[in-house]
Image 1: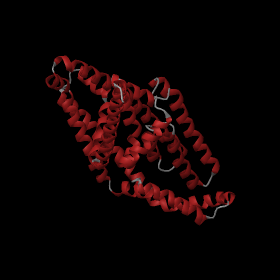
Image 2: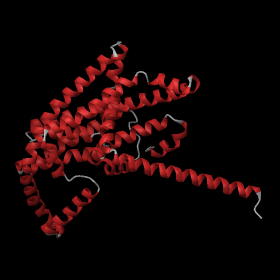
Image 3: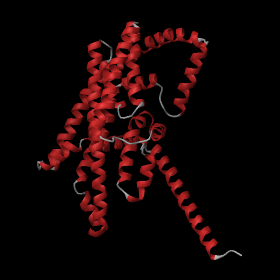
Image 4: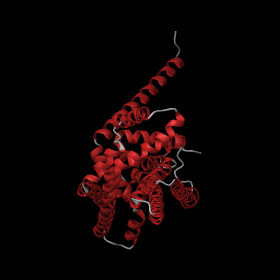
Length: 356
């Protein structure tokens, strides 16, 4: 005969199982929606991150009582101008890089053949390993480098057309942001809306602080890389500077990936191991100083994400949205974690994601 206490334990266990099953179903459905609507959600996510990153100038203009419409025009005009100039320069570099890609691939196998002898591998065996590696990326919706570069170099107008979606989303987000607090009050009532608006304000402040400083630091990193490579006479300096800016949003592995292409290009360009090592030392020095000296002082604790969470977020967002997802993975995960830290119910999960 089962007593009342046992029945209560079974009932509680059953209710927990139902809750976990419900959360699992929500996670699966959310992932399907994210992957299916990637064409829409990727530019929306980029627009949101831009709005947060530009929080300081937007708040300054708001304090100076610049009208909302004028603020939107100034920000959108500035973003369009930067995208046009940067996109034009990068597109030219990418097109030239794609034209020389067969030559670089030939040079790569020439240098690789010397190393393969030490490993006891033949070139066909190494090519088979390389092909299998690239195929695994293709099956996961990651485009191989050659295909990606070819698509990017195809049309500058195509790049500009895709960027306009981001700018449009930014304009509508900024247009509706001022009255959002009042809408919450109207929807939930003044008493319930107070805590909701307080939590929203804390989340906005925390995310703005992180993304604003991270964007500034990444821009400084990209500029230093560009100037250093330009002075060293390395081809496609603008392209590698932009790559360093983007990859700086991915901690640890991002800085390593950003160093490798210009070092390889230097070797293929000059055939000098000495110059390639010099370029590697300069770029590594920039990444170390910015990443280990400047960034901790400016950002304090920074991301506070465990390395495992960074890796898993990179794999997950890369699988969902491809290359754009990989670039957005850490900012999105950091934003979610910062948001969860502000809400009492999700604080335990945020602590589990922390590195300390």
